[in-house]
Length: 285
Ligand SMILES: C[S@@+](CC[C@H](N)C(=O)[O-])C[C@H]1O[C@@H](n2cnc3c(N)ncnc32)[C@H](O)[C@@H]1O
Image 1 (cartoon, rainbow, N blue to C red):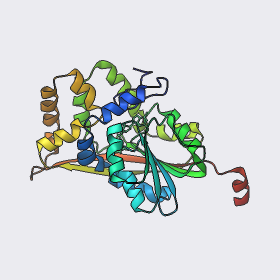
Image 2 (image 1 turned 30 degrees about the vertical axis):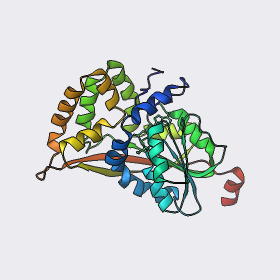
Image 3 (image 1 turned 180 degrees about the horizontal axis):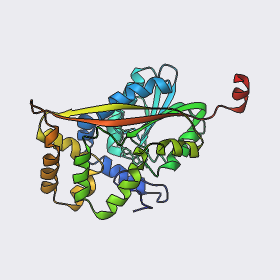
Image 4 (image 1 turned 90 degrees about the vertical axis):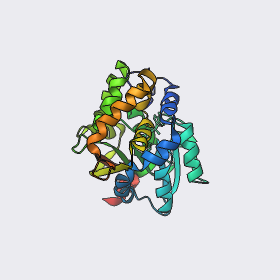
């Protein structure tokens, strides 16, 4: 454990190897994450892409890119996309989905790109409370005037996935709870904006979408939820059969009359800009 950041979810800078533990957790069921969960973000991606200019001629970095669905979308919009994630198993899927893209296994706290390499960057639920050093790195690799979009779960309503994550937390060791609280700080109004401001960004705008994710039956729902990083401490510390039983009981109210589990969640984003170079600022006056 490093600082109070949870290595099953995100790795904090003071321990140079902690990002590997985060990557192992998020990649522990990579195929299930990639095929059953990752599309949770499509509403927020659709909102953020035009705002960061993800399109033809733009060089974009996806920080904590996971299995590369956002990379795929940005490439389809014409951007040249690079990505980094701590989970080798997810990067393997991302590479298969995005032939030729520069996708690397590594830490967002030490981005392996030169200063000023990108016009834009995104991080979809990859930068959490306590991840300020990742924002400093994002600032470094952006060109002056470059745009950054980050997304994260808000405080709701709706927050239909909350009961499930409460169950997972209840089966996890105690220290996991403390660290999750810090990570989830970013949900509260103003926290992301403050983090971005401290890192040197100008905050341009905030937005919100409701993410909708569905699964057709209990087995698929369990596989999707068990593929997430926060499931790992519960599965390793608790009895996996009891975790599955309790999760399925907690999500039963989200089942509709057709048997489909449907979860709606408050998904927030903030768009920020690296200050333009002084000469550009003078020209715009
Ligand atoms: C909630 S998932 C989001 C993944 C992807 N952006 C998406 O929306 O599907 C969080 C991701 O952060 C990655 N991650 C955690 N700590 C990291 C670190 N220090 N450096 C790079 N990636 C990290 C995990 O491996 C995981 O893929």
